[in-house]
Length: 115
Length: 111
Image (tube, rainbow over all chains, first blue to last red; front, side, top):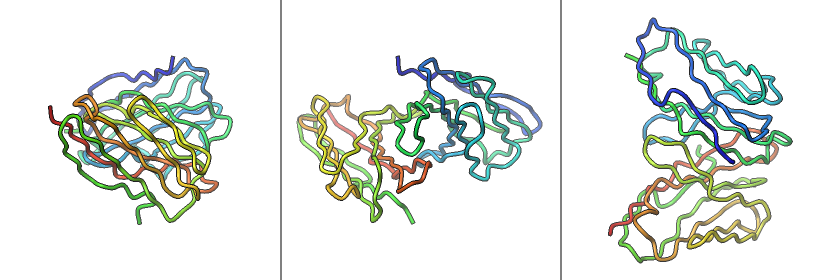
């Protein structure tokens, strides 16, 4: 099973809303990632969690707040977003033994629209 | 500066034709991964290449990693409409833990 699941599939929110994106994997992976992908662009790394600890934060604005409650779950809490934050948000996971050589497996993404 | 350059950017061919897409860099990569992505979906892993000169085959797809680990190619034989999608190469440069992506090749295979 190489499946990473993400909910919701689509999300529309106002700039004053608070919402969360969820990601789950049951492959026993110990590294999990959030990426942002704008239309016609490649994915861009936002955060990396390794063994439930935040390992990389790519200078993401504080209106995005990641959380890793356990090794199988990864959340992204959203608050006071801007319309330019509208994008496809992708979660990925990898074994986590050596991040710089790990193969990453991606979920289907959450399409976020900020009005 | 784009670390991974993919070419061509767009490719439209007829069913049954062969094609090759390229992923090039001036930097050495410890590994390269190829993904296929459909609109509104996440990238699906096709292959990971690790060893310089390595060739991997996945049915009609052949992947090659350059001897110097700076480039890779994907060759598709007898393309089918189901091969349509965005092909992304991605890799870890040197000792970095950040996966960097090329801009992708958008392939359309017409019936």
